[in-house]
Length: 104
Length: 319
Image: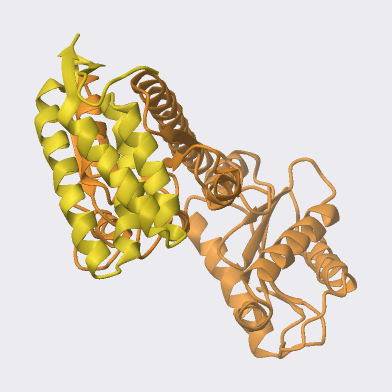
């Protein structure tokens, strides 16, 4: 603990997949937009699928936190927990702002 | 090696593709749903599969059709039955996993994927498939060789008695010996009565069993080591009797006829009796250069024809 809201988060990623990272992160930002729009339409199924997808792929790219958020999102959507969805989405946005990738 | 990745998540597909490419697996195909996968596999009937897939990585949770159902459908197709399927699943998914194995999946990996685990599983599954393919190849070769061997050998595969080829050789040999010794050579040509009807009504497997029993019965009737019974045709047998005159040949033929009838193999569709019977034609000759050996076979054949014509289940002797 002890991280401030704006401290950088360093993530080490295998250089084998270096060129896939920018697109991956961009698609997660797109996911945030999709989730917000789905919330307005009360389309929880879409949010569930996005969360599940994030859960399955995040850690594979090196972003365990994204897998974590995705898992919670999926459950929140299943339980019609809109507050939970909003929180996870905010956490994801914050994370994406702070993450810095180091290739090795 | 062509690997098919089936996953509705684009990020997952791209990652798997990259990891596999980097490990040297060049031919990676992708599908974003079960339906798309079926198309790639040629299952939807629209076209033949574009490439031969060696391995399928199949995500379990997908909208519309899930991976388990998809696995079941793929394994149900004959030509795809042996393509190995590795399920890709979120951790702690035991219930689903059991069902996936029941549907024919061979292994699983968990998501998010770990590069080392993924490559180890893929490598071991492909190695296993390779070995199985080679083994099937060897089996095919063995079966072909076996078939060749049967053709070249002297025995009829079904009944175990001499085959036609062996009869031809033996008869020729006995004829030439008869030319020197001037002893009579006899032939019995015989044919199962209404055998076509037997096959049509009881089936070919029963027909084969019947042929075997008749062959055994005829063999049992032969007395001397020089006597030979062979399968002459589909339901025809021939007996070669060196140094045997017409009378003795006729006695033996009648003995054979009785022995086969005594088997009491039921035949509800025979024109001759209620059991399987034989018609037999006997012919004898002292081999001489002025006659052809084929002439003796012809004479036996004519006698056989007579036996059939006069009611079947009997012996007729050529004069």
